[in-house]
Image 1 (cartoon, rainbow, N blue to C red):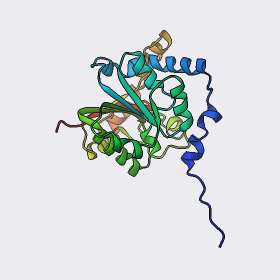
Image 2: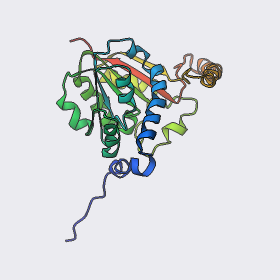
Image 3: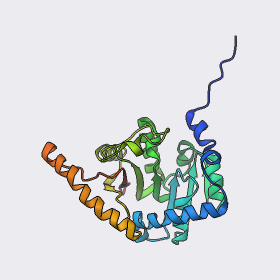
Image 4: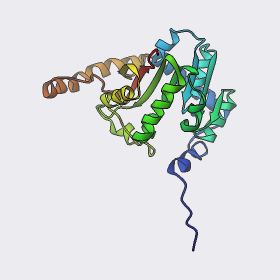
Amino acid sequence: MKEVIKPPDYRQRIYGEYVSAFKRTDRASLLAEAQRHARFFDHLFRPLLEESRTKDLLEAGCGPGHFLYWAESRGFQSVSGFDLSREQVELARSLELRAEESSFQSFLPRVRESYDWIVALDLIEHLTRDEGLEFLDLCRAALRPGGRIFLTTPNSAALRPGPVAAGDLTHETIYTPQTIALALRLTGYESVEVREIAPPPTSIRSLVRRMLWKMIRLWPMMIDLVEAGSSTRIYSRVMSVSAKRPLE
């Protein structure tokens, strides 16, 4: 009987050669990209900056290390991450960042109650519903009581969700503000907050974009209020989500 060889999982096929196929890998380009992201992270993680820099931070799905670079450059003392892609982990390590090649199913059970913050940027949408709930469960167990999880993920209730939601071959589950909040509550989190990610005011150009965004979003808000009597007030293509593990 002829042996049937199972083809590799699509994630392995895509992420296994993601860097060599799509990314520039010289050190100067890596640093320039990390520094460009840092300006956005200063805006996105302002609450984190205001807290103690002695907290233990973990990034799930750290990629080439943009958040890790930002956190270390802003003075956080304990920052590490993991990612499924060996090539991306190697990029992060080339910048002398602490990164490990691992899946969340392998990494998180080993680090129970070890972190004050877990950050997962544009990760949960790459998981099935079952995997997403498992990921949130394992993150909760890896957080210390009172610790926080911070996510960014595409918003299917956005004005134009398609370019982001359907713009990646590996996207599995696209959430609305209501469904991501429900997923977090089902997995034992509290103090769930979902926010828009509007253009950050990092330059004159982006400040103009932010002002225009505030005006444009009034129209769908009015439609929602007329049709449904309420509004999510979250219309950006990508949303940020934070929640807390209860004190136990």
